[in-house]
Length: 412
Image (tube, rainbow, N blue to C red):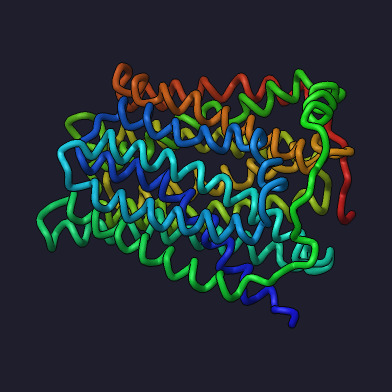
């Protein structure tokens, strides 16, 4: 019997987004709450990007061994176990090293889950269904971000006040995540369809894929653009939440977990989604070539709000929330140009594999700058660091001058 995509697409993409939100973003707040320095936190959590950087290397293995459905259920099971192990380790004296190791393994499971889920999405539906449900999958991916960056961070703050221990609070949060993922595993075991085309198969030569990618026209400026477009944002993203949480004596805004959860995990995520939607509509009407530079400016200029906030050192909730909403909307709007460029650049015989290579390079462009961001911030202080972030936006802007845009407008 054909199962309605409504039964599994929302839950599948919620399950894809939540581990990413927790591993990449929520972990930053958790380690900050638990007393880890900005330098150590940024260095070690940036390593979590590595599985997404190198996932093109083992994505053919997902095709060659077992079905996509099997991989989805297996990786969700591993993630549930991983959340439970982290919950157990947080109250220990060696929590930092041990939880970093476990979450790094969870990052591999999450990246593998992404490969399988995106493949299954295409295999289990016809082209019309794929087009119709692309908005649905994006919405539920963002819902997962709200739950992770918003609800979980706010709940940790509330539990800390009740239990008197931040370690206990975060342990309970990860235990709840483990239970939630166990329920998702059980649900998907029965709700995911058995697609006839979801079979073990071979996708072709890895050598051909790599050679054809690096022989593409305009490969050098494209590589530079992919790696450098988010050079500033990669570092800002690691330090923005610590900036809000840090005490005023070290240049922070001394805001609570609950406030940060609302600002970043709810209002910020919704602004990011809105910016992406507006960006998509704009490009559909006039083409990427017309909107490239406005989107680049929207991506980078709003970062000025952090310089202003650090100078004013105001923790007025409305002011800070409005500033972050402006920055995140600009980020969502500007990121549309980046996404569409790599889609265009990936076109060709191996477009799926080439897109995976582009996203891997994109993750590398986030990982490496993020690793040094904490050290740079501790040396410069918050205000000078945010000025430095603005300077880091320049290389990506310069690279954008050399890329080739192949406009394919959807509507005039």
